[in-house]
Length: 80
Image (cartoon, rainbow, N blue to C red; front, side):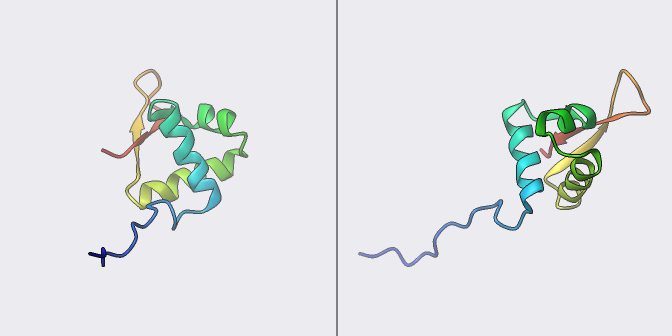
């Protein structure tokens, strides 16, 4: 008997390279990072890291949370 189901699609297939990298780093580092830590960890320029995180937020893959230590800053977390 053959399996007629289509092959499983990679959920990250529609992401840009920077979006995939940001998502990978967040998954590897516990799922929550500040923008500066995300930028430093990925080595991406500030604007590239921020834009990728904002696009991932628009795709409902990340959530932006206020930083409890400094309300002017925020952290990126994997969407739940």
